[in-house]
Length: 197
Image (tube, rainbow, N blue to C red):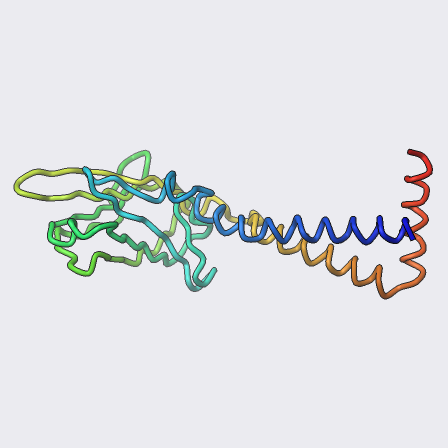
């Protein structure tokens, strides 16, 4: 009975640990930051703007900030945190780094809804800067957020690895419960480990 409990508790503990990591992987996709240290937030003077990138044709509603995984059409969204910016003029420029060449420009405009977005087709993997400039009473306040596009080309995402591991552990546990020979083998292995301790 003790051996069965050990194998059951091991599988259960692994499944519980991995399932706890899945919600954390959402934060990793968003820079792994808490709200207070969110690297997707840009201070434009005293005002905060939140930056988010989406690639709906590739990853649906997954949000990105510092690392956009693939090339292609990307929607960049800028949300004002607070209402003060809604009455001010804001300008946006995206530059390819390190050369600083402009890949997108949005002329100064007021965004009374507190949000604006644009779609850019990124064709080259590189580092980029989003420059958000506040134009208020003749004063220019520039801020920027750095991000990479296409850096993860060919790499497996953390989310994918976690999901695969959770599915494998779950499948092994179900197989353990449903196959007497496999269950006996695992129980024997745990019995040997317990005897050696």
